[in-house]
Image: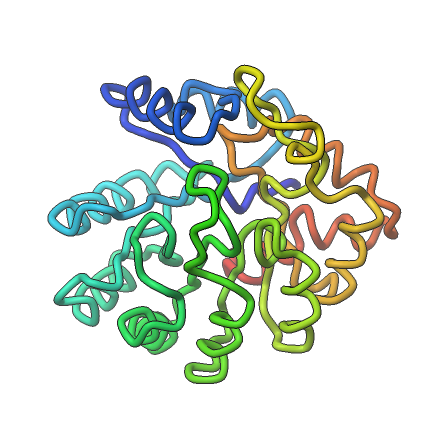
Length: 278
């Protein structure tokens, strides 16, 4: 079994527009058109049994509608849709309770897109409400390729938030902090946090020439192992950030890591099974 803990899809009617907008901002390649069917096709070709789909809320008025759709789609099984949440959502406690009652496993936050620091009191209340309801929280961590220099979820902010809330099911996307990897490992090791491997190993693929070779570099295999060791192999989840990374290349990166077969099994599915309760 393989579980991809970090993917994104868009409704068919807006997928092309959304992908083009995000490609323009990030100057990176999209490996699918961003639709559900294309994600499923990629999964089927690689033997990926399930993928977690993470909606990002930027419009407060659409949150409940997004979450209703996520609950409906979860009946299909192969894709596990999380709920959208925003730190500024007025009725967050009630909505998170509703998310739990609809059977959704977790929520997604994106401090960069949402413009709110991860240790802001508004974010802390969301983390608290998620914990109250035994929900997983996945957050974008570190920098974002589409927002150069914007810092909304630094290792220090995460440290502050963890000290305030003590979450048990917090997943830091992008190996704990995109392009802040060593600082994240140094500051957050021992905190019993989960990380996913999405968009962090190997190199970025640009749509057209824009970045230098140095800027395209992500973690090499040995650097990735150091991050895994810092957080612990029991706390690492395979993720791709599809459509922004190719699922096949991302899977090969994990298979080629110089770690034990047991560690690879944990990363590829066992840790996700335990965290998701499936």
